[in-house]
Image: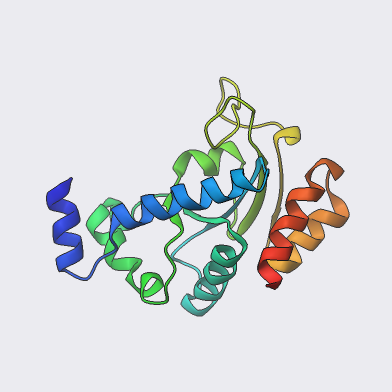
Amino acid sequence: MDNARQLATQNGGVDLNMLVNQYNAAAAANEMVGSRDVLYVFVSLSMPKASLIQLAKDVNKAGGMIAFRGFHNNKMSEMQKALKFLADEGITDMTIDPDGFKRYNVTAVPTYVVARVKENAERTPSCGATGQCNGADYIAVAGDVTLDYALEYMAGHGDRAYMDSIQFYLKRLSN
């Protein structure tokens, strides 16, 4: 793995250590403010680059996480090269989360998810034997909309139990 990191960095790829450290820092920041609900936005490299850049900037600003289903061309090195345009824009809060696509029944991108984290879970809810969460564990909206629109839609149409977290993310986005 160290060789892969070194080669990726030498070849202008994304520094995976940096991504992991920044994810952990963002998660810790959310816990410090008392938020137990996490924001994920599930995306794909098939989305227009300009849209993906703006969305990723907004998600990073709000304190959420951009999630891809898997590696580009099924290779970590290809994914690092493919994500370089985002890293060049200062976007670093990204993850590869194939289980998340299943967990939240993501069938279209972008899909915006605010998920409840169980008290004893690390960062994601426990979702039973199938790996799919039930509707009480998260709120989601899919569509080619801005992050603030998706959050405002969730606030107006979703479970009121998520309101504090949604307001938290909207406030961070507006600052």
